[in-house]
Image 1: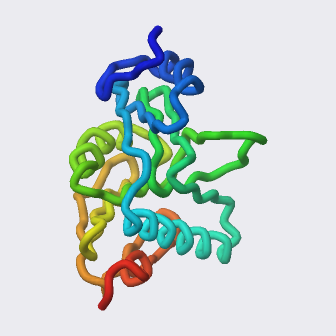
Image 2: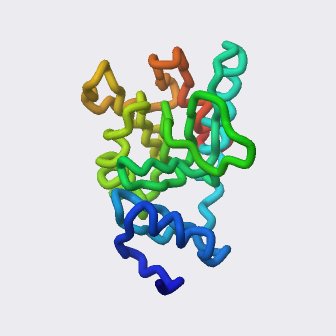
Length: 194
């Protein structure tokens, strides 16, 4: 098999796993429902700051509550064979013990993507179609990078509720499955001004 991956090749989960260690170090690859996506390396500072803000606030609240959850940033994989996906969410919350040297989890409870113009369609449609099939997932959060606007899909029992949208720095992102609440003002801290 060639070590070159075209931007939209299709691979099985196993083939993707076999090829991943040989990828060039200056490339990031994701597998979304069997389709390989060659990702941009690097992002605007606003994207990075929003991701850090979200991860910090979630970790802070989970730690204060003594909850056995782990918060990961975009270099840690969510790999799930059942949905033929291996993605690098901007922020991910998972529960349970981690084995030494782990580079991925398959049971996220919360997945967060900070959207840009280039990633919005993939985040809203392709990733959502795969993510909604994850049995562990309770909240899928889409954050607009350039304006105070957050979109959330919430699982209620076995069904997904309608998309809810939050706008403005005074809005609060509630994630009831874990009892978390993060003001948008904190999400956009040092990125957007009041």
